[in-house]
Length: 603
Image 1: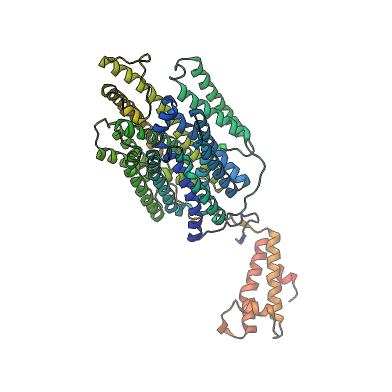
Image 2: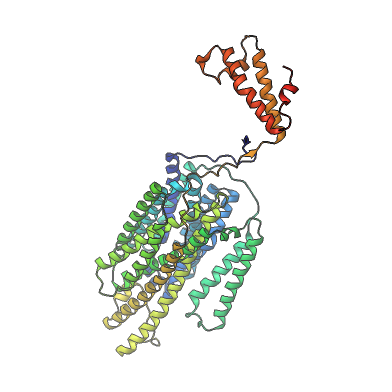
């Protein structure tokens, strides 16, 4: 049957060359490098910052504030980019990040620093989510593996450059920890200029509908959960009014967010995404990856600087094996995916290796060698490199193109949520274990400590300057507390491993454009019209008197040039192609009137 393409078939999206993709990637990677360095550069400086500004109990909030705002804003950035354009929102996030970095460097107490870090997290959320969204817009899933490897490389470079840079800044007397926030500003300005020049995306369809109610309820639910995990056991007892109140608020806001997303015109997280098993499983796996990864990376510097007595610079160097392993595993796995189209094995193996790496870290103690520490963190890096980018790739490949931004932002949201919850939960575990272990060890040693038995913990240098008996107690208490932190991460990583086992390995799409609409059959009127037109052309050709004619020339081209003169070839086509096709079309339109041609047009 003769068919035609549906009239409302979507127009093809632009196809980008490899060079154009690399130009766009340069801007994305520079911006990502800036935001990731801002996170990792503070990691090695946090013990010193907390020691100077005070408040070991607020240690986790310096990281958690950024993680929380990054988490709750991630899906909102994706939706806003659908409404107002990727480039505008990307540059907005970059500008917000720069302003917050400057304010963080000027902070005079922990409250100001935490507030500035919260605003900084808004910008980081936009940069991390929109980088993946833009990559999904311009690169097909089949080719995305190789470019995802580049994004993973940025993560690796920033992870090693950040701690090294942070350690150098803290160790340099003429700089100080405040420059950990100032140093990213020049990078961000260069990234802004590069993006303005190379990032050229087609305009998006505008819509003024923004899911404010959904954003509010999601933010409130995540914030209540974070407050519960951070303050519980410190500011109030776990079995208290505030525990139940915050838990109730978190559950209530979660229920309201589900209602808001089901009724919103343009929801931040469309409910249809949760009917997609690939999205659900990759989100769960990303949640557990975030908990394990950020929980380990935030508290590893405390072990290195406090327990092992390393300088901030040397503690940054100790993360080098993890970064190299993460970089190599991410790039190699990306190339394998591009060449084979097979991807499932990598997140499955990656989450299992993450669990193994966390277990190995939990076995570290005061006397562990640097070689053992380096090997353990390298194992963790291999697992992270195999899993992080592949989970986003799997989610994007399993989603409809209209949901690309929401899917990418959604998976990033759950990974960030896992990171925020992991940092807060692990911080609560460490704080409570540290308090209990120190009390136990002090009692066993029979030491008399002023201040009601509480030991005031300052910077790593201050701890190293303590009297030997008390310093040994502090170091042992930190070792035991961090052992618990890492061992708790093992079952969390295994839950992510189980989630990836149930992923269905869908074939990777080879294009970023939607498939053409299914051909639609011609109506009877169309068949009659086409048949009559072909018969009319055949008659005009047969009546031609040999004079030059555009119609005669066009029809003659349908026959081989060596089969006669132009007129002979045209008449042959009319008799053997045009007229038989005309009769077939008319017969298909009106089977009972097969003589319609000869009866309807004079011969």
